[in-house]
Length: 161
Image (tube, rainbow, N blue to C red; front, side, top):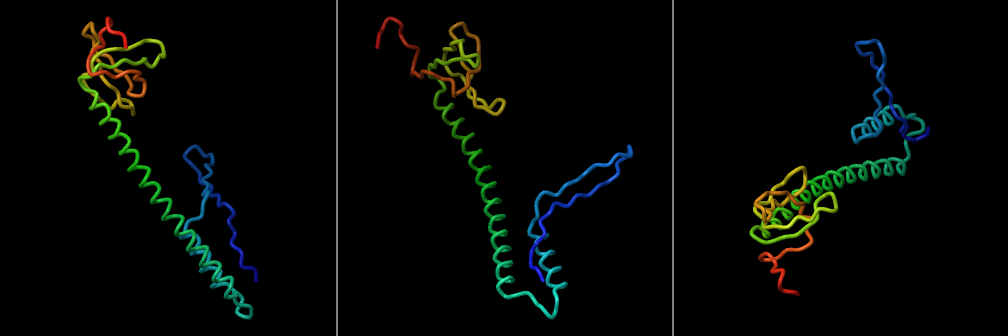
């Protein structure tokens, strides 16, 4: 008797309300599927030619590896989520440290120079943005990653560095 696991994809068809068929495909086998296959194999094995111990150990090792990979994947998802929150908080802290400072940067168009004093930091559209008060009193948003210069106060144009 062969001790192989068939990993072909299962395809189910269902009828929807307009009479056409939708195809639902299960692309991966989980640990429950593996256990079902293992149990089915053990129940249907030839009693005169039972499964070899080496094959059983190999299957259990495969199951153990699958379980560990699932655990690692879950840990990596949790780490990714934690790092995303940490990155967001870090960017906001970085921006908060610039409140009251004079900054210069390039707008998202790549050409317009934005200069002024940082008023606030906000999280907008998935990115940290500084709200800058320009010399004319207007408020504009500037992405933190587009800042080119940070100073304690507005530079004096008469002083050369």
